[in-house]
Amino acid sequence: MIFNSALSSWESWCLAIVLIAFYYSLNYVKNHTKNKFPFSVYLLISLISGFAYWFFIKVKFSISNPIFFKQVIYLLIIELFTFGYIAILYTDLESRAALFQDATHDKLTHAYNYDAFDIDFRSLFKDNVISDGKFTMMMFDIDHFKSINDTYGHLTGDRVLQTVVRVVQSVLAKNDKNIKLYRTGGEEFNIIFPHYHVKETQAIVKEIFEAVNHTEVDVKENKIHITISVGVSEISKKDVSVNDFYSRVDKALYHSKRNGRKEITII
Image (cartoon, rainbow, N blue to C red; front, top):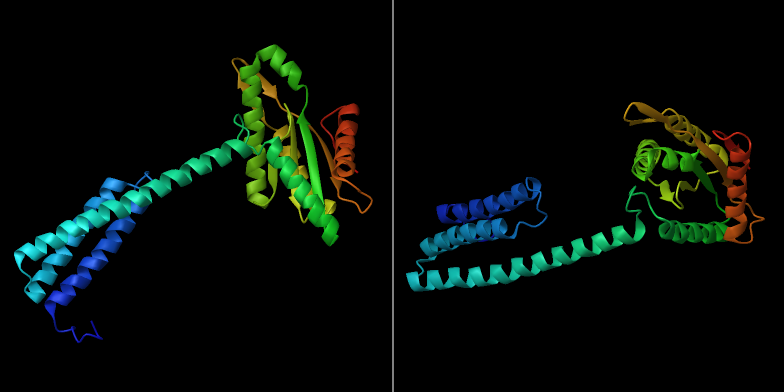
């Protein structure tokens, strides 16, 4: 408006208001709807805004009615194609996100699954060997989990797994969102601490240990008191392969289980 010397034109101010209202309307809908792309609402807002915009252009430049309605029809066609294409893109993105979620997450607990663990573990191991960095891993499993399944059934066992994951995830989210939890077996889990020395993980490991060990699951008139056994180790220059590192963490976990369970062993 400044460049076109249109500050004194009320029609130009109306055009500016229409554009501002159009932007804020779309933004409002985006922030107040559960639908990621409400196609019909966006299209309606665009039509109303487009009609108002061309109306003020008609008034300002004295455009004839046939040309005015022709431009509105052209606008409708363009908006149908534009918003339709964007809607297809959103659908495709949602499908890809769902496929990625299924491929990398455990369906029961929603923790990362073994495939995701294997990819991340090997990648971090390679990066740390090259850069001589730091990298720690924690492995734990739920004590007497088979007994829980045999006594209370698999549905209760599933609840125990989900509860443990929820508790651990809450601890990790509070400390460092870059630390990932993986379900790598039935009741076995791994936690990767990228760029952490083993001493730097001890506070988080202890917090996880205490949080889970103070967790109970109600089963009718009974309460299942959950405990875990833990093994922790840090990558070493002597580790030639990922198996060397993994075996050492597994050995630490086995030591905890062999010595009465409900214990943390750091190697």
